[in-house]
Length: 275
Image (tube, rainbow, N blue to C red; front, side):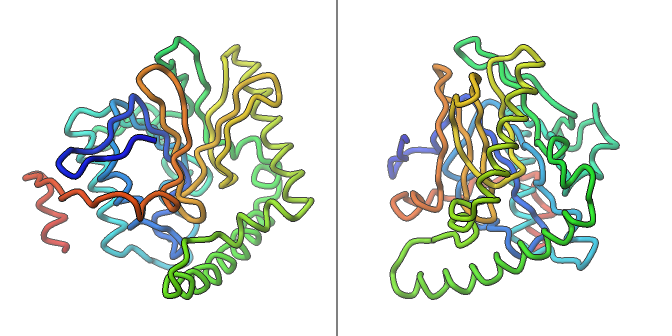
C-alpha cells in the first residue's frame, strides 16, 4: 500500500470499489470511511451495494451527521471529476427502480463490466441475487440481520474497551465466520456461485460484496474479489494504474497515516448548514 506524505494529497488509484457501508445502521463505521475517502481518491469509484441500509431505516430512523458527511464526500468526488457508479444491493434495493438514472452525477446500474488497465474484464455485482437465503427466505434474512446487528452492537462496546487499553480494532463477527463451519461453507458456496456467474458472462473475474468478507483468490478458476464492508472489517478494493488489485484494510492501517485537511467545496452549503 502507498502511504501519504505529510505535505501531499490523497493516494490516487485507477479504481476504488466500496461495498456494504450500511449508512443508516448503528453499526456503520462512517467516520472511518470518511477518513479513508479523505486519504484516497480514484478516477472511477464503484459503490457495490448496501451503501444505504434501507432495512434499518424502515425500522427506526438513524442518520447522524457523519453518515451525511459520507454522502456529501462521495458527491463531491463526482463533482470533481471521478466517475461514480452505484450497483444497488438488497439493503438499498429501493434504488433498483432507478437503473439508468443519475443522482448528483452518480450512475445507478444493475451490474457493470469493469475493464481493468491490463485489459482484463470483471463482472461487478453486489451478489445478493445469488444468495439463496435472501432470494427465497426473506424472513430468515431479516431475522439473521437482526442477530447480526446485535453482534455488531456487542462488538462496538468490546472495541471501545480495547481502544482504551491501546489495542487495535478486532471484529468478533469476522472471527466467528472463520471459526463456524456452517459460515465457512456458506462463504465457499457463495464464492463458487459468483465465479460461475462470471464464467457465464465470459469475463476474467467477478467483483462483489454482500457477505462482508474481503478476499481475492483464483480458487474456482477465475478471479474472485470481494470488497468487504464498513461495518466490521473496514475494507475496500483498489485497482492500481497497471491493473493490479489490492485489498486496503483501513482499520489496520489508519493509525499510521497522517490526517489530511478537509478541502473546501462551495457547493456543500447544505452540509455546512447541517453541521
